[in-house]
Image 1 (cartoon, helix red, strand yellow):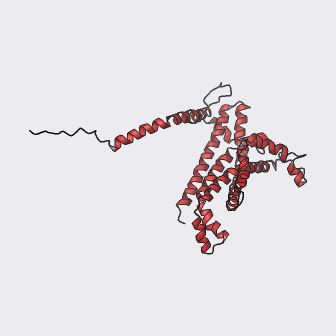
Image 2: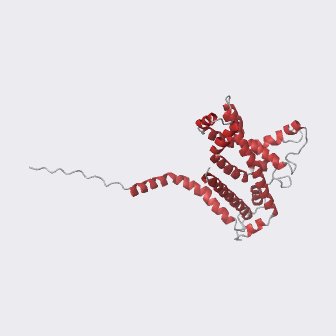
Image 3: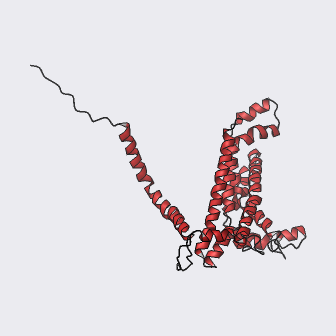
Amino acid sequence: MTTTVTAPATAAPVTAARAGRSWTQHGLLFVAPFLVVYVAFLVWPLLLGLRMSLTSVNIAGSNDRFVGFANYAQAFGDPRMWNSLWNTVRFTVLSTIPLVVLGLALALLVHNLRFMRWLWRLSFFAPFLLPSAVVSLLWMYMIYQPSFGLLNNALGTDVLWLGDPGVAMWSIVLTTVWWTVGFNFLLYLAALQSIPEHLYEAASIDGASAWDKLRSITLPMLRRTTGLIVVLQLLASLKVFDQIYLMTGGGPDDSTRPIIEYAYDTGFTGYRIGYASAVSYILFVLIVVISLVQLRLFRKREESPR
């Protein structure tokens, strides 16, 4: 008698397409909460603001009349808007360069120290943790106060650091550099610690000096970090508002008023929400263009032969 053994049925093999769909479905499920928050608090306000910039709506929500690009045309012909935009660009240029250079210098200093590194790291990074209101009040009443401020007493002068149109912007830049350089310092320090030590050892064997090591090893290895810091710093400086609003209110004579403060005053003091939205989108386009140009430049520099 012959017994026939039947092999158990096996499940159909899972194809690559089915596995890919499964991973896609699970991935969408995991990112769904983020997408909801992203759309609700970024995409939707962005589209709503764009719609408002094409209307004459005021702060009460009334007179919501479609005016097309009339707000933009008025903004481009508004000398106060151009002045505030120039103040923003001026602050960006004056603050970005020292923040990048000083952040690198401090990181190099701490990286090469052999004692109490933790204290120097804490000292340079601690101001960045302070709120903008604390920093502004500290510098206003302890450093820049004309009568008993530390700066005038140390220099033996009576300069109106926040009251002179020719000095106020420089004073705000100095405060901003002291306050925010710790972030760039930390990024550079982390990048320095990731550079392989054997590169410096090989350079020392070849008789390279400290300057040769900095020029040929350190700076090229920090190229990507520098590109990131420059882009982040430009974005942060173009969006300046807090310290200027608290320290000078845009004065004296609108010499420090940034474009965000001009949009704020126009919308919430002048009640012209539609026009303020148009001014904000002009700044938005400027930020996008500058960011794309910077990324393109650094990408070309990375792809160029060394």
